[in-house]
Image (cartoon, rainbow, N blue to C red):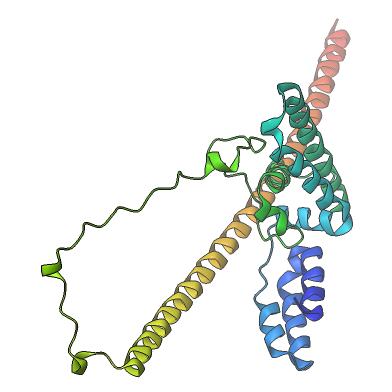
Length: 278
């Protein structure tokens, strides 16, 4: 990663996501004006993070020790198959404490003392996944969406010897011996393919495969971008609805207080009226 691209990524994934799109365009334009069109294209291709991914990115960039602490615990968990039950339980508790601590730190760094429950859960899930999945850990700081452990029901701390995870080698089937009488007749010299033509055919097929792969990649990028935007839109909607719900609850509480005070005044007025009529 070039210095220009690295600096752009650092700024974009640390800044508030609401400013991402505008600032990404500015940085891409700046790289293009600096005579770096390839870098400008890479900057323009950086994807906007969801709010929860941004919280984790900001934590990692604010405290470089976070990745080291996650990696250290992950290394211990990978060796847990050779440990006794007591040590495994200790590591399980340590993982829970570390994830909880880093979740609180991430929300504090991002100035979110009272975040929506969904956002907190996604931050926690992402940090937990970073311990279990090296791929998630490698992308800390530039995450575009929350991550979740996908261990097919296995606990992230469960580890197995490599031999247990690898399929047993299978011997290739022995081809039956071909009778000498049925051996193919060597091709006539005039039927031998031209090496240049064979090489050209191989190159043509290779180019076709490259073009197919490039089209598949472009379609996958477009699909991922659309899914990421849909996720971001839904996350924004959830935040808006949660804010509206919190506001409605506050107004309901105030209405209840006013109703209680009005009923109190009504009882006092009735009591005073009854006293005066005596």
